[in-house]
Image (cartoon, rainbow, N blue to C red; front, side):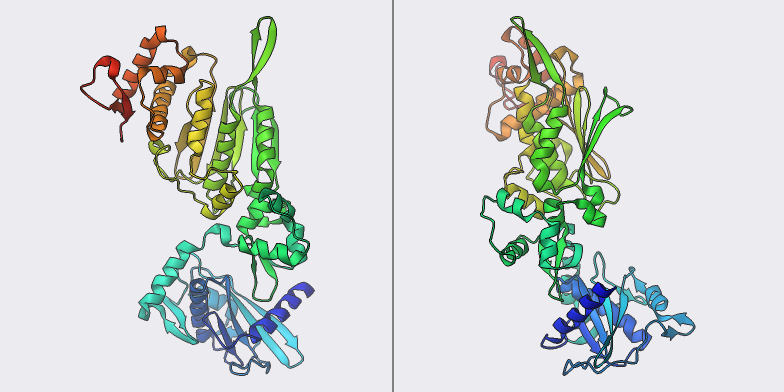
Length: 486
């Protein structure tokens, strides 16, 4: 309680220093007519969104011209509209719901009441069916100012979840307590500054931290997700920690190990990859009397799977987060949020990350690919081991990638062969490699004497509509293949 009071006292001091009322701040002394308050909540909430502010403020007890505290007679806990408490009455007139709150402070010059109003998020805030906005220091109907309305709707698209607040009102010392700032400098190959102010400056440049209206700081969701020492310290991000589960067999009925990685993604990325690789079964071979073990799934494919679930997850989804699952003969990654591109065009489509700010940083520190080629690299790894191409599935609220392992081509299913033929043809096409029977033989690990096997796979893939001849008139030995969309 004491900390909250100190926060709002320092907030008042900072707001008093501003040159005047603005579009997200309004001063009153004793004018607390309920209808007027409701209209101001709408106007200030909408204007805060336009001005890229997390919150707006309506203060009673401060002179709007001198900014001096004069005190107010307003008592929000006792105020009513008719027989209804004013807070309930105001909440009933607002759409969508606005979690405003009143704070009362006693000062040497009288009482100050602060109404803290969250910025509109996904749609304009209205009061009794009318949307308001601030134009300078005046309250107006939003519909009368189309340019303001356009900016408001644009703001909903421009404020991603990554840049919203994970934790507010922390001082510089608390920022460095919650975030592993030293790891940031290690990832960036930069020397660790000798003072905290320089660290905070860098954190703000990266948008991991923002300065609040009272001079303290807020840690953004991106800052927490990438650099948190413990995600459990951020209540609504706990479920975004990466879970790794190892099963016995190929079903989910017998989980034999589960690990939750509670540090920020950037800090633990390599540790998580290393851990997954220790869970992947090894293939044993006898070579000249010596027993040798070979990894069943390539590290580069696992690494790209992990990177994809991080940057493509829907962070706004409640109760779920990224997960990696290891079975005896397959590895699966899954994340909340559907795939943003068509499954069959996943290799050639221009990259589109759901969390672009986070993806940008992970590319800078070389955790994710600069050119959006994560799926390409997965296919490269699978090709090197002559195992099926990755399989991608998506639905309304999920995306899943699967890697399969088979000891021999005879164990592959028909769908595995067609998918691999198609995706490798796509991979070759975008890398300007001509695809002939010999190229696909190499991908499947088939000797030349068995080229008829590949010819059959090519025929099945063409009949399925995934690939076609680059030249319909080419002689059989000169036939080359391209994706159906080329």
